[in-house]
Length: 479
Image 1 (cartoon, rainbow, N blue to C red):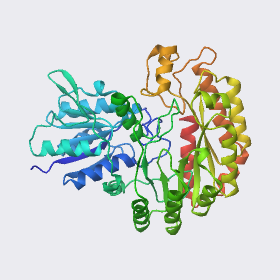
Image 2: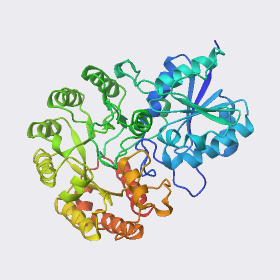
Image 3: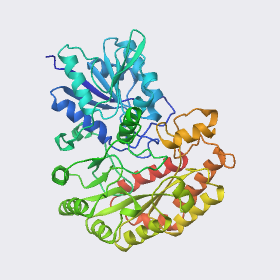
């Protein structure tokens, strides 16, 4: 068996183009975040006995010549591709094959999963659909042992000019069997989260997927990859998978032992029930961690809010989208504006900072008036953070189908866009340009308000964390 050499590559981007954020997958980078899904895959590859290297050419830029030198040392180059990075990753894949025709290029993630036909430009390019861990391990084993690999479930490939797509791989049932993400591969990168204002910082995952049915939703990049694959074959969302409370506790303890002080949980939905939340909160409190998570408003009970406040939670991202109940009902959000208000009140009562996520244009019921009303209400609630984005008709979602059928997409063709700045939607009564101007107005009026500046300044623990946050704010507002 050949001991394959693998290189996990975060490719450099074309000069002047802002790099894609590959964890959430739908924005450009505002502040560096470890791609925990890629690090999880790297840990599985290493556990299987293959040599693993990691090259982040975004946070540590190198020339094209040096990039080719790096890829020349590997047998297999792996890239985690999201929609905003597809074109750039394809370009890099072509460069690698031009210089090294014998190298394998493996592309996973939602961008590769949806645009797989565009990605397959060479017979030594492989696209991995859905959950990548078991698929990549099986395919690597075939390559290392010189066995037939074309029957590997969950891949697409090119053969004699024809694209082949194999059947879906069964989703993992035991997430506890996965090794801890290979965070040592990114030890040379200084990750900081402006919401938490404490470092060293990393991300973590305790579950996969979300059972709810918001028509527009693209949660994390791994969830999106799973959903694209599952919907392709079954027409349904994939089931939710969980790690055990004990395994979550063990990882938190490992992070503490290795010097981490802050954790951002990337779960699409972190709060499932009070029993599970209580166990995880206890582990976080026992290890003196500062942390953040994403949650639904209807999950914030009085007891849950108390647990969060007592265990070091410094930010809860609530997906609000709108304070208009007709819009919330149209988009199948499953909550009401009253539930949002109740959740915010409970969190504030327990000293848990709240980040409200507003999504402009999720429904044809949206108007400039409803958008302004939602932003004004969010500001009056004095949330600690406010994130305003414009909805995108992501392929694979119900909203994408609706937008295509109704001609809401500019040019009637989806194009990857940064939801923090751009729109490719035109409603008859609400243009893309109008949504973009309302987005800019909302961000500017919130983040440059005296209240926000004064309250945030007092929370930083170090000058370095403040400078990091200031840079992130500049990128968010002005690019």
